[in-house]
Length: 311
Ligand SMILES: Nc1ncnc2c1ncn2[C@@H]1O[C@H](COP(=O)(O)OP(=O)(O)OP(=O)(O)O)[C@@H](O)[C@H]1O
Ligand SMILES: [Mg+2]
Image (tube, rainbow, N blue to C red; front, side):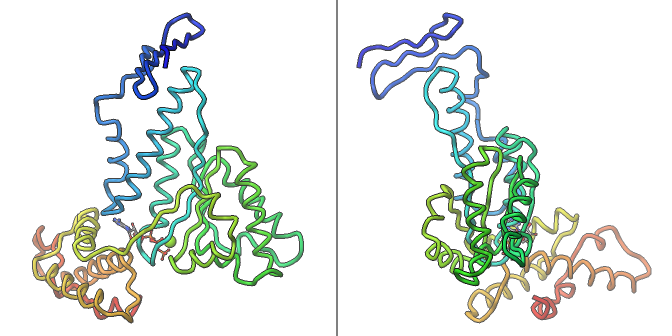
């Protein structure tokens, strides 16, 4: 390919394409981000999430695409707008809601959303009781979500009543607005994996409108233990060795029990919060409480059987 030069309005030569494969971009006007870790701020935002590597990779891809698209636009090259609507599939407590909330902030920081707020909705927020009400309710919700993220949990419940159900109208209205509402709105549909798959099969037009389909896998035991340490230390607590051992054993049993409806990281959060209350009760019986005792959660504070009962 012949060397091609693209001139900016100010007359500066900004880009020299040498052949189809290699291109060199010389842009004195933009900040120099190449060479440093361009993803450091994303790593920092997502550092509190244990695992979720696929998600972290995708967010970086989105960010890279946006920055490069901006550069391309500056050079007068065509650039395709990135559609950001997403589907989240994962079992209970795998982080779907927490991640979606975080994304609102990340997208705001990336200038992808103008407000960065987060609206969580479920069937009742979208579906009305009489004809015409559903489209109206759904439109109002989208309006409220403009500039931010609209997160619809258990999205498949919109399709539960079949053809004559008003849920269908909500889906149609959402789909219409996904295309009409420009870029300043991100829709995330979330739910359990099997039900989500079924939902997509029943609504074949939907899948292609969501360029990002993210799986939230169940956490393994090491990840759950990391989450435990993190949740404890965020609250300025620490688990004793025997508490850790007790929890690890319990998790192992749960993981091997096909009938358990184990709720991943949510279970861990419940364990920590319950243990904190048990520790408080235990300490109140003492005359002298040492600083270390205020921090330590012991094996006895972990009433895992009680937690299981309140899943
Ligand atoms: N990867 C993770 N690292 C640390 N904490 C996590 C992680 N995933 C989830 N959590 C924590 O677990 C709890 C439950 O997460 P969340 O409510 O986001 O799950 P969910 O997938 O939306 O569950 P459900 O399907 O039941 O609505 C939250 O307190 C969240 O902060
Ligand atoms: Mg949730």
